[in-house]
Length: 410
Image (cartoon, rainbow, N blue to C red; front, side, top):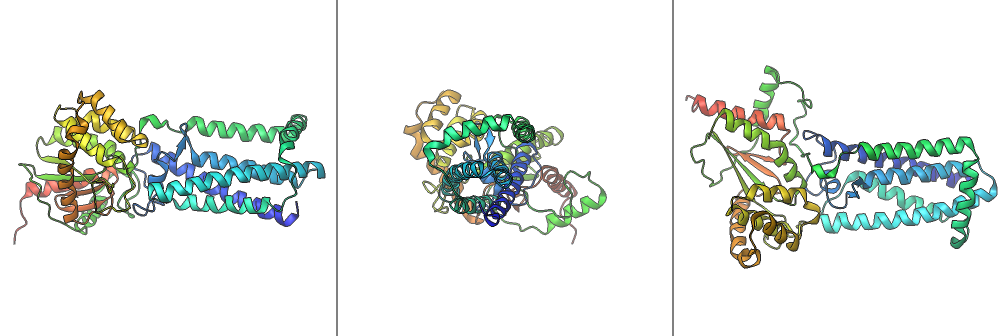
């Protein structure tokens, strides 16, 4: 391996490792902090959250980003070893790198297809990873290699040499131990997604306590947002919160979990004053012609299932099951869940007529040109993606205060 190729490969391994490690950190924050806003959530199509929380974001509960960081770490360590080893070992390392880069390239080609064609969303950090893997694959072709069939035998011999080399063994143990620790501390996916992309409030820091200054800032932000009209009745409430929802949308699940206790607190402190209405807006062209590139192929079925479960008073358990199982939604899985949760076995018979109700909600979304889910409308104020929970609660409190004070004097 020439010095130039070695330096270039090491540089790509470092860039890829940094991007994969950053992706792992972002995925961790999304999975553990309901108020976290990812810097790479730009819109519905350019969104780390959509990618990381999809069924392609993890393998067996382990984030794909963490596996990528491990891969780049192995490539980097082998590249460093190639500059410090005898000619015979360098030749073996060339074979290992070619095998690793081939596996890596196949993986990123699959993930790229899944991202662009299946999810319809892209992660900017992932693109950097894809480019780094592609570069390493091209460089590995310039490294002297060995017959592939001899690689297992050579690997066994080199592992024996590794065990007998204290410094190399210590580095390997530390690397493997760090990877295992990262896997161990990562939140379990069984708890479901808990993050939501937030409408930016750049002046308001994370979870800072509210003061008169921050309250004024929230008011200024709130008053600057566009207001729309929706033909949804208040039914005696002072604040109407409408959510355009997709049960296969990770951010919809996140805001559901994050806002549920907020609505409960208002119902306790202001009974009947806050009405929360969830309208269906599945990003699935099967029932929503306004999303021709819709990426959620089970979303129409999910919306129908919740409506059918509502007839048995089981819509909340049905919705929670859908949010918890977004990665595996299909007509069959939704039908089975409806029968298990609500005791309804006539999903197929009632599907078409119930789907017309879903389409009525979609038509309401068309009135205000919905671009992404979730979209909230709070007393006419339209918020795309949601707000951090503390600001969402403050916005409702602000609307309650204004409703109690009455209309402004002329």
